[in-house]
Length: 616
Image (cartoon, rainbow, N blue to C red):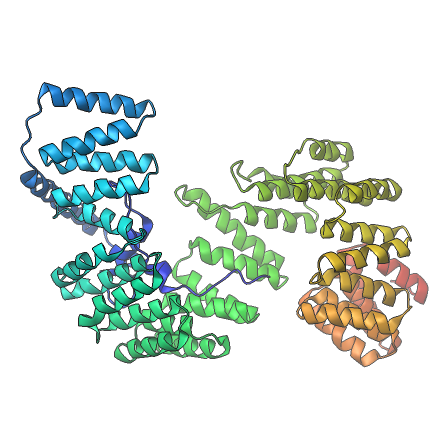
């Protein structure tokens, strides 16, 4: 499994940016939650509340909004709407709706300057935003803020625009003023927001210098240390980042943010893992630290320990979709299909109950279909594929269609599967090659090997530089006994994709299986194992070449490790043969029976039993 998990960074928790008028982003919501606690920005969001508390909160919020509207109305200028002004406004709006932006924009800006009404400047800004005119937007927003300097919305939008412009000097007085006015318990959130905003500036050097000046009056606060650590990390100065993170941790040793920041700046995960573990022993309810620890363990391939951490997280929130998905992936990695199926099923159910959740269930659905297929339940596999949303990622949608065709053929409808593939018309050459390989696979599975070979030969001419297609072609060539073609194709794959460990492993295994050029086979497999040291199939190949070399103890070691990672029938057959040759016939028979139970038609098992004159 690739390292899909990363430590939650402070940026992702406290991101803040300016938005168009009338909108609020998720980042701002997170920053709002952060203001409830200087220690953990997710604390407010995680805290539950009773219905009465919720109702009271809603009433309080409505009252605050009413007061805010009244304050805005009180400071707006009293502008008389003349017939001439009304005519200009209507003409501008109608023209804007027809696609013209510049004339209406200039009208609104001119009227705003004449009347000193900030609402007109705001409308000009909206028009410029819709037209994607950054300079004109900034001019309108600057006027809007000038006309209504007390407007938080205008200031926020102004700051967001200026920070991403070529000259950020105008925002420094805004930051200084806001920090002075902020109550001490709110100042930390502002510092985080300022650091995030300045992180988007084009002139990084000027932004860093400004940040240092802005936070200088609050230099010894916890939040200032965290902000300084995040800024140093952003510019690649890990030593400074670590000093600042250590200072923050010294001020608040029980702070989740501080320990997460420290984990983020330490590059060595061997040091990060024990630090997070120690924090969790003292603070077992620290969910964000536990999640970070779990992800570090995943990166270290300590899947069992990572799984335990995610299971602990899930107990606190049984319907947490992220933890369910992580556990499903880990169970799949640990070859526990039953548990994986349970986690992914719950993941899909949770997303179904929460339509506002924008996560795509397609990857989970594809894995569920695969699990159902592997246990022989093709109708269930097809039912999972039926749930794939039409608007999913095109590559995932294609994968679902390829899987559907395979399942149709498996049910006996080879013609239907091929017809489905013929109807797929992807635009990308790589996807076209995938469709071609999928059709070849259908024919191969149906036993029509020569027809599959001809089709693959034609596909290889269409896509001569596609390493995945050439790799599959090589395996098919070996299947029909054309080993010279297989070797030529695999060497082409190595040239096209030098880091393709599958090609090295395939050629090495083929040589070992045919008991020829064993030293070369060993070198190829060793190279593949160096690239992918945890791959059970490469470990199986290494065990098999050791067996061919007569090194039975080494062979048994590799094959047992491989089988522990992946209880695959072919690995079981190989391990069984090694044990058989070592005189452990009963253990060999048990492994072969396991292989037969999983795959009764396995060619390797049948040929092995025939060669050794054994029966089960």
